[in-house]
Image 1 (cartoon, rainbow, N blue to C red):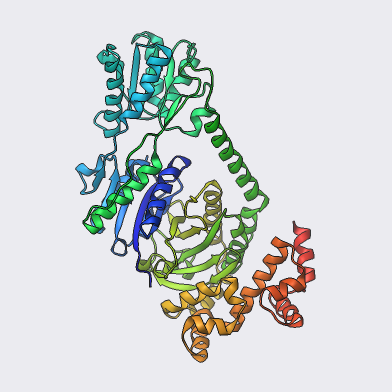
Image 2: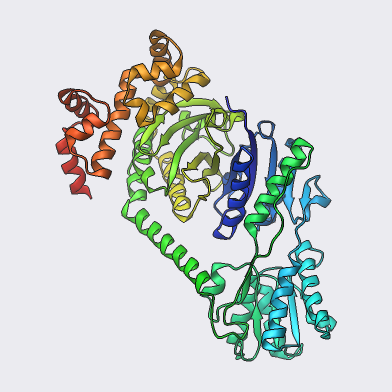
Length: 581
């Protein structure tokens, strides 16, 4: 039984710009001994109704508090749907960051002003480049951050006794059109040409700089431009944008601390707010750029390129789309989990309704879900485990030695909802990345393709799956499966499984037969064989060494069991794999 607090974190689409905030949330939760469940989608399309069902999966009664990053939602319809869902079903504390939603919803709004950072950028333009006619382009009127950043600009201008006319301050929408409109007004003579423009985010700054260049202005020689947020696009742009890296990791820590204050109704120690870092590039008039920031961005680009190559080399779409039934599809997913960077445990969960009838409308999650695949690195923990949707995921209730971070993402196609993926990483600071988003999308597409095929074969599989899931498995079985997935346990075999289960051998056999359709010994041998294959493929073990290192005590028994599972000898298996690679 897991007695840790569980904090649910709700994002729209997690991008690289959110990584530092998430790392702050997960690091602080880890230090406070809390588990984290992060729910997010992949698309920016407000028509993807099947995707937003991931937020319906959240059982607010099983959480202790909610962090709702509503600023990550750029589709208002989906944001409002999610906010209404929280309002209707959540009785636990909910915290948001610099939000306007608190006027309509009873969420605690953690307001963190970043006016000092805008003050620093504006001061740089005045001190370093001796500009005095400086405009400020901000977000929507009344928006907390938009107004706070104006204050930072005004403080800097007034501290140098510089005049600020009303037309110097321009409200926008934090999006590209605001920068382009300002550039057009400058070029047309509708407003006087400034010496510099401080923008409240990088998106507007990049749009402004590029539009000015297209209209014949040189940036920064004619007009200097600065941004805010330190997006990777800022340094890749020409000209590269001088910007500011806010302490987002600290903001994440503060969110967790304040939420725990609300949950426990007492003040906990919170980290003190500190400065971020100004990223000097060429758009302000400096003739250099931030080498450290450039290196970070380039490393991320290289990493993403490697992810793309890895996915392409794995032929994932082809392997999954050629699966002509559900069993082959799950086998394919199992084989492709190696493409998930740094994962610790992966779960593939499908609607029970989808298993019964692939053609039935799937507009939401069914009341009963099925863990079709539960895998720790190279070893399957379990398959075909029935659970109630209200549990969200059986593993959430498992005891663990340290806090965990779960990422929940939908499996869908347009308005159809098939199930979800969940993943944990070896390092709690890891965040789902481009590779995982692509990997998950491939699974969704393959599920949709599978649903369009003839159902004759699928019905036989359905009967087999249903037969092995008469009722919800006992909680202790999940713990046995989890612990036995580790080499130090399955190498020791059945005696170790009995020690972990604390039940008799006869009862253990009955439970395995009922819920998994196999025997403990067969299950252990499967784990050993998969581990032996990983030793041969990943660590270049000789066949004999892999045999004994995986727990087999007899080479002939190893060969017999291997051939029964894989249909060929270990030597032939390796030859075939090498030919495929």
